[in-house]
Length: 93
Image 1 (cartoon, one colour):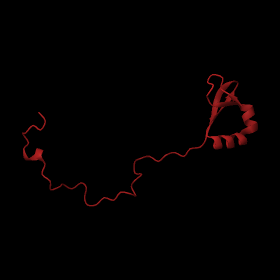
Image 2: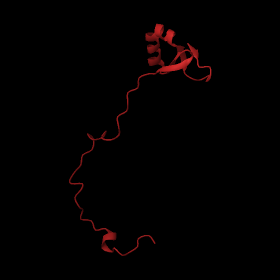
Image 3: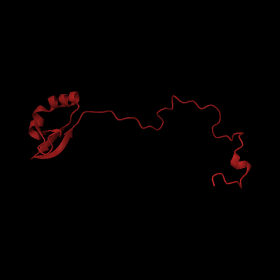
Image 4: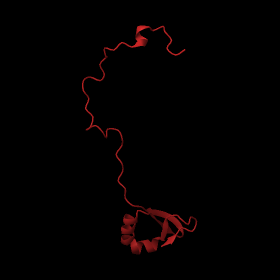
């Protein structure tokens, strides 16, 4: 395997023919090291072998089993707001 000539610290590259012969070993290496391998055909990148990383769950609804709503959260409250008691007063001049 060779390093990409354009970027010295870039991902490893391998020719498609070499990848075909060593694919199972490369899969194990990528899974163990976490580093991806770029597969080239005629000197041009065509594919990337990267380690599997499970997708994170969307944040919406992830705490639904941890939160308990007590009472009616949409019902009006008995609190009187200052703005309601004097609607003509300017609060921030």
